[in-house]
Length: 76
Image (tube, helix red, strand yellow):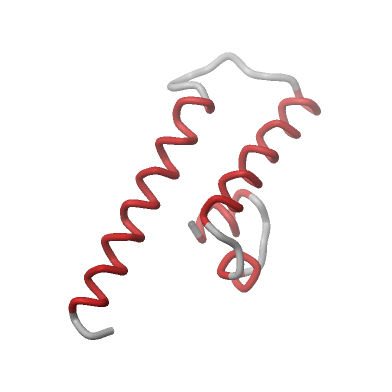
């Protein structure tokens, strides 16, 4: 999530850590919409953003949950 929040959105690390995954996802979608409005939509090279975006965040959310459970299991 830090990669998206800091790299794509230009947020500081603290802003990223203070924002929920859902908040980062919505901000990312908003940034994509803004760029499309400014520069126009490009022809898709791979999967369209509408398909790849939610998948990316679903994967990141699963990874975060797995890490949290592992930390709880190990007493962290």
